[in-house]
Amino acid sequence: MDVLGELSHLSLQFQKDSISLPTAVEAIEASKEVLKVMAKGDGPKLRAVKVECSCGSYRGIELSDTYADAEERLKSSGEPLIHDIVACLDEKYQTDTFLMAMCTLDPKHWPEDLTECGNQEVVLLLEHFKEILMKNSCDAKQSKEAPHKTQWEKAAGQTSNFSNGDTDDDDDELVLFDK
Image (cartoon, rainbow, N blue to C red; front, side, top):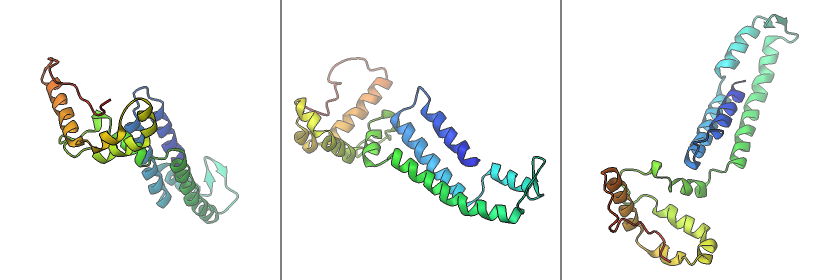
């Protein structure tokens, strides 16, 4: 019961118009953690059902099994079922290093100090998209060897310039890839 509520919550997160890749990754990871906690113990809805069933009936319907037998079967099947659901989420939504690297590109998730932020992720993405970049006249090798720190610092400067009302166009262009 509680598992379905968590999966429903995750589904609703995916249906939002404003969802971004980082938000989706965070929602998946959060749901997996909640489910792992549920595997170790009962959620609030299951606890309520157990309390009612301990009297030998559920919502006025007499139970044919003893409460202890039913609870043992539920306990032995619940944890493996939840672990299977988490495994399915892992398989379907692989929040691997590539997706996490993509999340680095979202300015909403940039830290205050950008001097070391995202260097490894940019290199990973350059490698992943090497063929596409080369077809579009981008020298991925040169971009990997370029001092990314300078580019990220320039991005940080642009962000602060725009927030301070700087609207002049002099030398504000951010170039991560030279053609």
